[in-house]
Image (cartoon, rainbow over all chains, first blue to last red; front, side, top):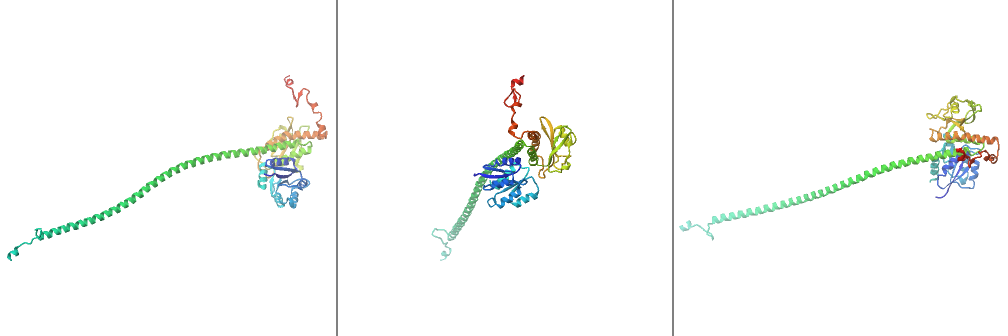
Length: 124
Length: 300
């Protein structure tokens, strides 16, 4: 099985570490971390990622803007995006999905939930 | 001629013709009867032949039937054996299913425990990963918000006079409702005084500043130095998880020491390398290695 790469964009180190812990349990998964949308975009540029996991509420550039930027870039147009947010409202989910997010997970997150969603989107 | 009239005619055998005629008639009758009897016998024979053929057919049919019944009996025996095998297999399958369910439950339990341990590890790691009070408070907020699922929460610190606890940090709430609490008064004051964790297990909604859903005592060196009050939970948080209580205990034990360490660091030296100097001088002279006194000294 070839390597899989995932970019995790999350400003909370605690949450980021927990997501990385969950992803580490998927075989051949390589994780790259970014603490805001701008850093995330920089890491995306010139690199290939099989998946992006992003928070919504972040400083400098929030998750919704990041999704918009990713979807407007032809080289990352098709990359699956999972949105992780504390907001439980249908409206936020709908906005993220309308902008091109593939799936969402609401906090507090559970590792099995993240693993299942990632595997589902990557077809593994 | 007259004598010829009285003369009786005779045949070659010498018997009178009437007698001969009568004998012939008799013989003919006997022969005819014999023919009739023979014909009757032939017919009878034919009839018996047909009857025998019929009986033979019947016999063959009955033999076939008996053979078929034997086959059926044999089949029934086989079916019985197969039924038993099927029943044994079903019992085995049910047993395997039970074992499978048991292992599946165990796997899910282990998965949950692993997840809980990961949460506790990350929480503890991050609380002590910084020397800046602001970051420690951010981590405490993240832990409450993102791990526990708290929507609104307040962190209180007990004042030096040990009579009141002041709110020093909070999330997503109207600051005007925040006020110091007297130790021993109200839920927060009670927890600050007793140091006993309070969780309202029966209800997860409708909490407020006076009736929080959980209050976690913050302790260091055996003293209660403050409390974290969880007022409301996120709408998607439907119930307390087992790990929540563990996270509260972890917060209670680590948040205060992390805050004290970062605050002392912030008030004093800003270079962590400088702040580490002089540690050895703070150990008793008779200690070995990592700060424990030597066995001889303990016995004395």
